[in-house]
Image (tube, rainbow, N blue to C red):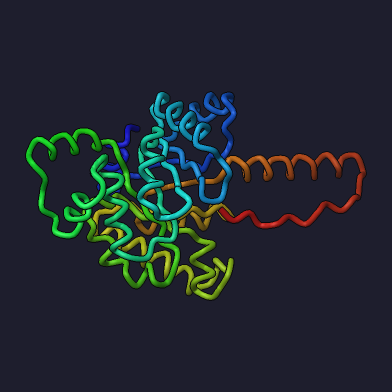
Length: 271
């Protein structure tokens, strides 16, 4: 999908499919390209990817017709602009909690390259620029996507106002941080967590915004949440898929060879 197609699908409620990719091996492109994905989620909040590697990844996936969406390290408009300049179709901003943060990010993503006082005034009063400039900005930024992570109690409390920012295309739940903010770290099975997830999805779809959760510990639970109306489907992580496959195979091989060595306890990977 192009960025524009992805944004339209998110707002209309159509399912879009992607996965989190951290590998920047050139061979990975051929593998990912065969999965029929609409987008890839590239994480620079928790994963060390430098600017050149990130730009290479974004432009390579765009060439395959797969929209690259990059999670930036913080809700920083200047970092968002840098990532967009590098070839991303859109950004995911982590731990967003206020309308002001979303509006500032919308300026960096949807009104590039305007900055400074002119941009600030536009964000404050909504008054349009000169006709020629408006046409230019609309054309230049037509493929750009803005998604924010909803992963805290303050974000939920401000969600109705956040979702009214028209430039926002979707919200993505960060389950680990949300569970911690709710006071129930990694207890995703509790009704308190389930209620929060479903409430976020419901409100997002009421405002015609895309909604999803990046959850990989149970595919059945993942599907159950998506069936409540969410449509931004971010399934798995290349890193965890490797671990899962290797763990299964090595357990089988050890058993077949009569090796009873205890494997190391696996630590949760929170991204």
